[in-house]
Length: 113
Length: 121
Image 1 (cartoon, each protein chain N blue to C red):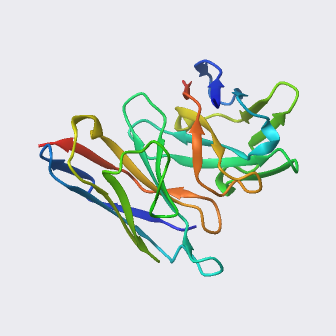
Image 2 (image 1 turned 120 degrees about the vertical axis):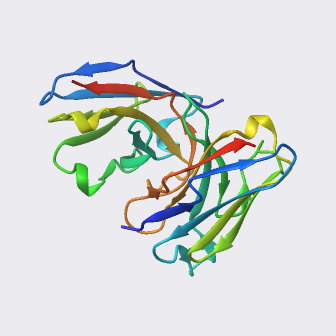
């Protein structure tokens, strides 16, 4: 089973500044047959289900503000949120879907500093 | 517009079973795969298993093998999860989610139910 490890566990960022959340997989999740990284980012607010933000490591879901961007390949990935807004306060999770059961990271709590 | 609506909260005794349903509207079941993900209080999500209604194929996470059953009813457009031999560690919110793919449950999930709290006590 692939283990997903996020860092940091929590993060405080000032409004208007940039937040970066890292996700590392215990083995590569790059599908060499199509060049896609099987990595997804979700946002979860209290009392709500996870919301799809980014898939294939860097493709933004329809309706997601372009302040959210994803990058990385192989085993190391980053979710970046520029111009942080109050509504971005949430827990962010990465998830892989490459071989075996999909697994999620432990989450990164993003707060306003 | 796709919507997944789950059944209500449950309180169960240890050793009993629970069944959670997820009714899909805005599309036929066969056009997508569906999964169940649970989240214990303060923890990250955990994938339990899924079903591909088009093929009738079900996959379970190994740790739940033998006490979990996932089914789909295309006539009511409903997916269900049954978990048996409940223990206190099964206390969690259970979510159904729709895979973007029609052919695999190991994918990313673009629509989620509102969640069903199951308390085992």
